[in-house]
Image (cartoon, rainbow, N blue to C red; front, side, top):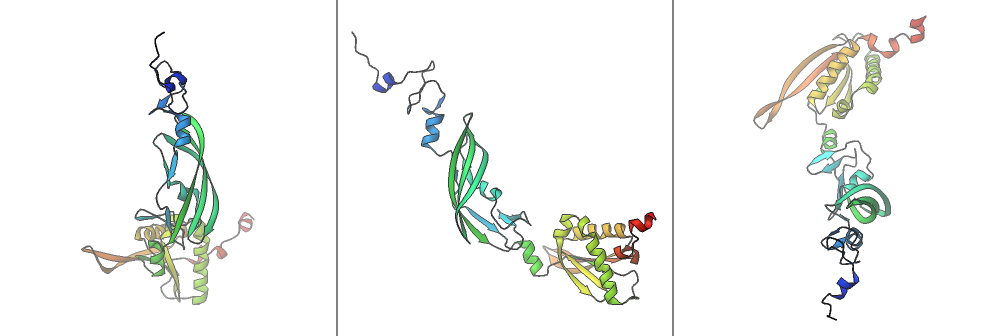
Length: 272
């Protein structure tokens, strides 16, 4: 009887019709890539890894995150979220991440230790895996909050009475205008609110300072229509930047007494 020239591994592992088999477990009834089936590959190699030195830079005032060279998600929580952590996950090319749940295993003010349980899809099948990471927290004041703290502005909305000369006591005038302003706030667009820097109380009314002239103009025009107010716009030269003149724009809104919510008849009275 002639001697067989097959190696022991070839004798132990039956080949499929295409002659392929897993060099680790010997299975020939499943597809292989570079000699390994999906089960063996996932046991021997991490399907998802973690980027080097994961760090989240956030503004402690408004919660904005520094992503690249831009601040994003102003108004977010100052606590880490799944959105912060997922961007540090590095899946293999064949891996799609379906779900992730995180457990915090240790924390101090500047470092978070976390374990993530992942549901992924690899080579057509659903699998589970886990990762651990330590995320460094850096606090840095964002551009918008820095501008607010420094009283930076490009436009002003002046809230005034209907007449240039104050005919009512200044305290009552300011209180009336403040009521009108507060009454409108639930209707104000978020991007207009985000452009607001600070407000200042004056004997003749209120000044509302904005970091964005376009937002201030849009809000002033909206308030004019909403309140039946008078609007006047003027600009003054502030300086030069990149060879261009820079202007600060003032929008003077004169608010009629009838815009005060306290002066409006109630629905019950109007129905009667």
